[in-house]
Image (cartoon, rainbow, N blue to C red; front, side):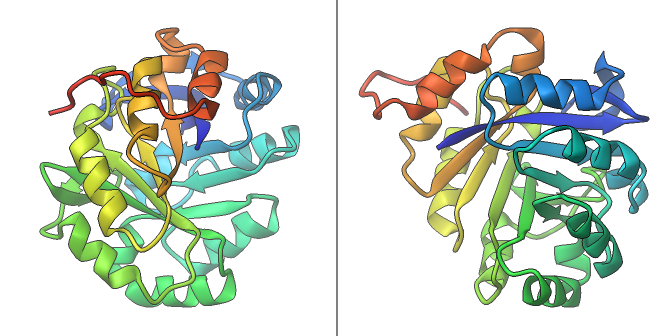
Length: 251
């Protein structure tokens, strides 16, 4: 399991939100490429970049900043937020982005997923963002009637790289991940799962790792920026053998 630092972009700055609320942001840097270099220098193997403006508006708003990040570092970058058509996918993947994350598009435009996975097998991730047991769309501003399991069932036939599973209620709250939800996602998903939302301490990394090999990565954001979790310690916890130590509850 690898630890993936998150860089969330809003108006060209690196920020973190509380539960995806665009009105509750904390800004950490006005130099996204420098932040990307920082995480790479500490040993990051991959970065998770989100265009927050794009996620809400339905089209990329921080495209140039994303490209500046990919050009500043040598590790792979996965990008989500506002990717709703094939041209945008092509633009990102032709400009150095390793993988793109599709979210809303999966529910509202299944043909896009079919075309994208056929043209770019193994380079499409699906973002399954969950709030109160239902999948959220449009940058988390709306909640659909679909459950994660129902979405997973629709994905089986596609050549996807994996699933980014985010528990919105835990995102940016520093309260720990929702372990039962992650466990259920790992059991139901036909693809590897990258966990996101709430990871705060070394114990959280260990707890997610104990859920099994189906979870191949964990995205960490606010805890790294606030200093409640050091990146070297997170890397060590993710690389160490599974611990039998008790883990923190999550519901």
